Amino acid sequence: MEPVKSGISFCRRCGHSLVTRWLESELHERDVCASCGWIDYRNPKLLVTCMVHWGDRLLLCRRGVEPAKGLWYPPTGFVEAGETLEEAVARELREESGVQINPSELALYAVASLPHMNQIYVAYRGELHAEPQLIPGPEALEVKLFGEQEVQQLQIAFSDMVGGFPRTFFSRLRNAQFPVPSVTLRRDSPAVSDNQQNAPAAFP
Ligand SMILES: [Zn+2]
Image 1: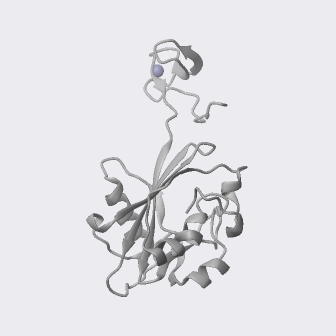
Image 2: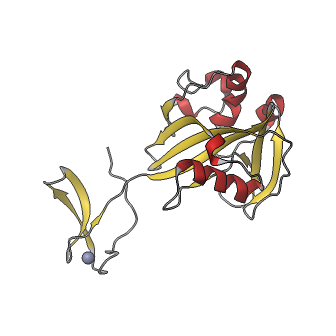
């Protein structure tokens, strides 16, 4: 497998150049500072996303920024230092849609590895108990609640990857079955199909 490049070529600690070197102690090739020995670990970034619904309507935002500007997506973002996963979901939801949810009310929904992006997504589900007041955040053009038929017609952002979550949410909601799948999404695998008919069994 090709190592994922971080794009950083200088040491964050002392500013010297990094060199790629096999480290016997870690049994791995790393970018290492030639001067101070600092190692540039290229671990995956951790993101959260949420399937928040009021009854049988799913909350989605419309992206106001590139990439995928104008397309719909569930509130998603990076986990900040010091946050739990559930706190990160509640914060992203509040920032992007104005909706408040108690982190303790969120349930694990799916885990997705995107090795080609060097990202891991953890998705949560949350049910709202009253009709929410929707206020788009600075990066969203709109926030809306959608029924199943409407979602199938929407252009979902990054539908080659995480876009499958909104499209397959409703069948799981109807059956009230929420087993937590751990899936790998690759740009060139059948799992990336935008066509629900071709969606893999592993992506419920
Ligand atoms: Zn250094």
